[in-house]
Image 1: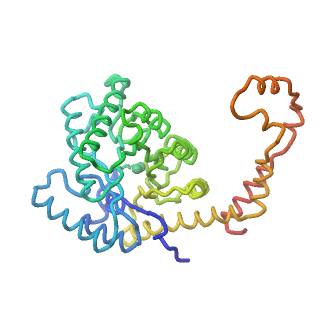
Image 2 (image 1 turned 90 degrees about the vertical axis):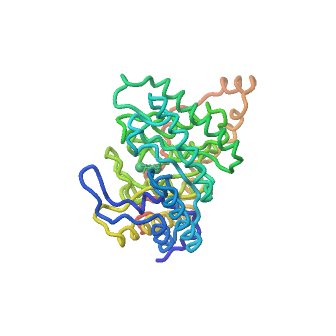
Image 3 (image 1 turned 180 degrees about the horizontal axis):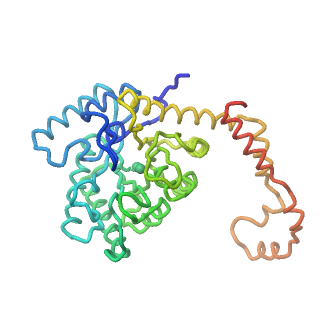
Length: 386
Ligand code: GLT
Ligand code: MN
Ligand code: MN
């Protein structure tokens, strides 16, 4: 089957298809490609957009001449392919200066440099058309809590984000922020470890309305959580402005596998949630090809991410159309008029009526819910036999 990828805003980071396969135990297995060449590769596979860290595009030590030629080659590639840049971000984790974090580092010079680097990176992102700016606190954490007061770290993080929101407003940029959580790796323990932490933290910011979240499948799985539930909370709060799709076996290191590689069923429930609620922001695949692959394998990887999403979206539609499944759902969710009188806004009359009502606890509990049947129907639908 062929799928029309242009129906979705599928995006990839320069660091994803540009990943050269190095890991802590071995070096590069693929030759490094230029940012422009990666845009052409993404054009070839049918992606909608490309995202980058400042230093994916412009190396940290680039001369002004190198900067200009890289930017113009990149802009030309965007024009030639029709790809857009919906999101940009700052690399605040690779350079040795960030060994103790960026906004939360103990050294004030590092914290100030992190702000300066991010202001410059925001300018670069906006120049390329980005409307969303991601903050992944790669090294915002500790190995030992002897080294940093966690309350101070939260305050430093807040101060940094407040400053940068003001910067965006002062420049008149049309740009919003999205915070991305991860529980550990590369630091032993990272602050704001999961999306729920981020949602709570956002509400303490001066410009909370400018800040949403960018949850990543692998990161919540590393924490042992149900990703779909994390995403649902962000969605319900109106804060799901970006998403990092990939896959990850529970309990492992940060694997960043192709979307759907490991947990197909949870990928299905995630896609179903996004489709049911008409999520319309970019679907970013923050993943990379297996280390065994050459660039043909990288293209297979990229197409595979998008195909799996489209296939699961089709399955979600099939779930909505399946009369047996829908009949079960209708039964499970049936309202009870007598009970409806007790719900909604509190009144003392309602409370009195509720207190007076006699519940047949045993009869209610004795009723089977048919969830076994519903889940098996879901499995059979996913396995292609319905
Ligand atoms: C890095 C990390 C990702 C983040 C990227 C944005 S960089 O690859 O593992 O999850 O989204 O900074
Ligand atoms: Mn990510
Ligand atoms: Mn990751």
